[in-house]
Image (cartoon, rainbow, N blue to C red):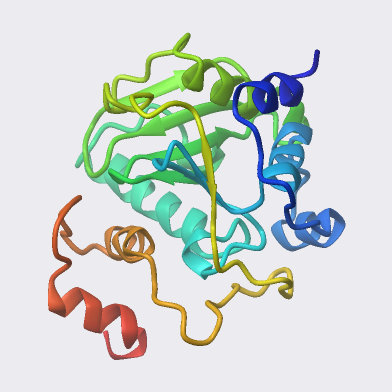
Length: 229
């Protein structure tokens, strides 16, 4: 049984998902991607595991949750600043960290992209929201998700109640049917931005935003009018 088979047996995917142009996606990113990630993205599409862990996807509804959007570079720049200034310890070279997901609480999930030309050997790392703690997993993304969702792997940064409602995947309900790879996907007309996207954008741009509750008006205005910041 393959890694993706174990994951789908544990967490059934939606009946349909988007078909991704991986050649164009990898060309836009300038790197090859792990096979298991491409299988997960094609099988599940954009969405969240247990309503908590959101993987970035090439066809996500906003640029802030798109694999080809600006988040990975923005987060890498922040980590480099933290490492250089000593604000927070960063146990890995930020140049080798590529952000691939975010939780509802603001923890980021990364690939450790070493060796750069061997994506099947990339492992997983994560950091807490605006804090010093990190975790690592010595395996690929599909194995990591299976270990976490089965309860075999405990991530100290994740809530104890993660599996309290069972194991499930919630697809994004308003994902675009197509997008120009390399260009950030935009929400469909009339779609309200997800608060998770706004919080992720705010943290990446240096705003102090609470994990829960009302998002300050100033941050909402900055999100809606980024060119005025």
